Image (cartoon, rainbow, N blue to C red; front, side):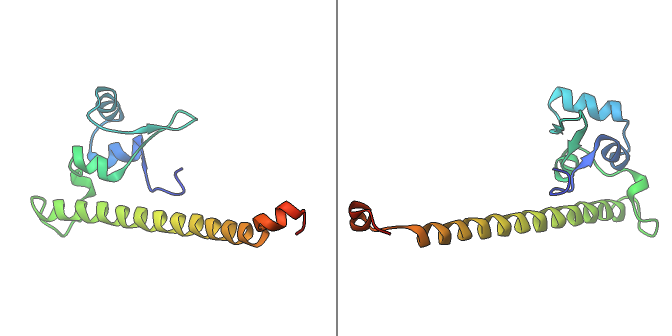
Length: 123
């Protein structure tokens, strides 16, 4: 479901956290980091989950900011951006399914017969 949710691959997550893929994989195996495995065997990690366990790597920081607080703020801004995209995707999916449900309801209401019509075999 990568199209709906902006999840990170193991490689992307490792780069963001400044860790090796192996280190992240071990965290997944130990249950420290939650992730899901796709049908093709690829691990996907939610950015919020990654930020819960790891801090962003120094390479993720903006160059103009101090690395202590400013870099952390920059990393958190990136997480916020990813989460905002995720929220927008969920809203769009919600709107889609709501429209489907409303269309189905209209269709069913248009075909509904009263008990009297069903009894008499009309309509």
